[in-house]
Amino acid sequence: MTDNIRNFCIIAHIDHGKSTLADRLLEFTHTVEQRKMKEQILDTMDLERERGITIKLQPVRMDYQNYILNLIDTPGHVDFTYEVSRSLAAVEGALLLVDATQGIQAQTLANYHLAQEQGLTIIPVINKIDLPSARIKETAQELIDLLHCSATDIVMVSGKTGQGIEELLKTVINKIPPPQIKNNHLQALIFDSIYNDYKGVVAYVRIFGGEVKMGDKIHFIGTNKTSEILEVGYFKPQFVKSAVLKTGEIGYLISGIKDLSSCRVGDTIINHDQIPNQKNLTLPGYKQIKSMVFAGFFCKEGIEYVDLREGLEKIKLTDASLFFEPEHSPALGPGFRCGFLGLLHMEIIQERLSREYQLDLIVTTPSVAYQIKKKNNTNYLIIHSPQELPNSGEIIETLEPWVKVSIITPKDYLGNLMSLMTEKRGVYLNTDYFSHDSARLILHYEMPLSSVLTDFYDKLKSSSSGYASLNYELIGYRSCQVERLDIVIAEEKVDALATIVYQDEAYRVGRKIVESLKEVLPRAMFEIKIQAVLGYQEQNANKGGKIIASERIPPMRKDVTGYLYGGDITRKRKLLEKQKRGKKKMRALGKGRVDIPTTAYLSVLKR
Image (cartoon, rainbow, N blue to C red; front, side, top):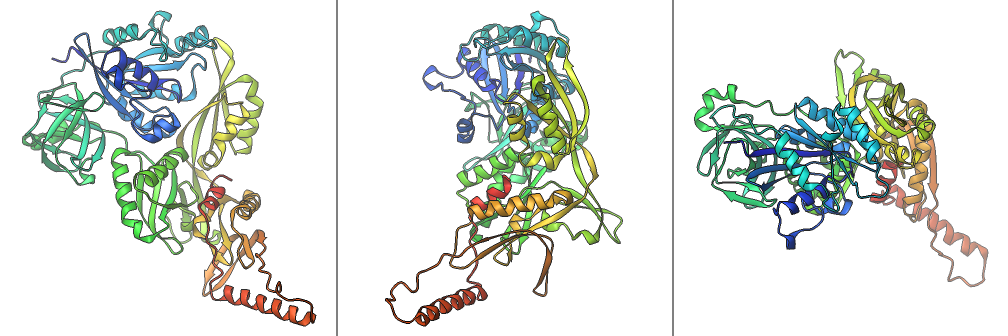
């Protein structure tokens, strides 16, 4: 029977206290012993604990008053929305958590609409009520306006002190419906997975029908693979073996699969003998996620290529929103073109690769996916990197992705934010006010995704003294005027520094990049020229293009005349001429190559 099971997740804007509230729930239900208790216990990655953010969804099972409560803690940042949507498909209810000091924020709204689309029971919860700056009354009114609920439906809690936790658990039991039994045949949805060096692929599943136990023969519908169950269990939050997983339960299963591509997130698992009936048993799964930001990942040492591929495959298993395909750069060698949901997502993947797989990476300047129509070609081509963009003479039309942006802000910062949006090519749609409180409002804009990429989030926060919050969603492609801007250092084109720029912004961007590089590149024994070039061509060694900005780093000068004492000036001149010829020869022999440090790539990235 499933009457005593409740499956729910916590959804909220970033930093509204999801992980802290989860800690109190685990503590109150004695799921984790007091001596093992620590802050952010469900954030198992070092990276999560250091940054104080949740990156990965994390399930845990709590036993309370003869009920099984399966909780999934979810991330709050816009780059990890896919983790949230996967969690919502595995549960019947959601706690919509709002910080009493900040009120409803952009991601609160986005997550609320996601939960609504899934038809979940939503319980409004106000957190951080113990803080002196808590605006409990105003926040409650915002929730009443949003959910059309009554004040008695809102649960007041403090994730820090534990106040209201018992009432919250009672509300979960009373209001969230138990799982429905759809059929007696096994139907399990894979909502996440990880790779274990000893056990192979571990699939995180929600059982929608039937049951699964050790020794059962199972079939993965999406990948058409068949395997045998070696172990099943649930999360406490570490793995705890059990004899069987039944309908409505959330747990893990290990089937000895070592091939990473055989266990896909969103796939349905059925019994082997039900293969003829698999069409009727397939669960909806998840929408194929589209990457928004693309960048090239290359190893400084070519021999690390195999490790990079293996690292990306293993991370892909735990992060279904990561996309990658092989790419070869003449300057950087073999690597991968990777797709991400945003810049934070890219930063986290880069950090994980360097920590978990000890890889020293070069990451190219991120760009969005453009659609281009070339002469003599009726179809649009999709390009993911500046290197793929042809010269403007070959292109009839270029389309770029646009997003709809929602910004929640106090009205005092309205002027600053509207100026920022104009600077970032935003198109104003409308302004919504919270009905009860005109002190805060929601700005709606449409803007190019590329404008969100570089430094938009930092500028948004500084324009609003940190109060504004942001959410955005892709709305389609529109025409644009862009060109490839190449960076040439010491007569060598550096592929990794190429970027796609708007034609009317090319000079400003080029100027900024060469100035940044001048600051970070080390001096050498010869002069280093740094040039930003539009329409760079490299054919038969005849290099051409329009140089729009340049800087030079003067050479370090060795004192070749230091040992001379008096004498004729011609001796001094002869030595200096010889030094000059040596530098010229060094450059001609290609020994005048500049080793570009990682900080140089970062300076272009953060321009």
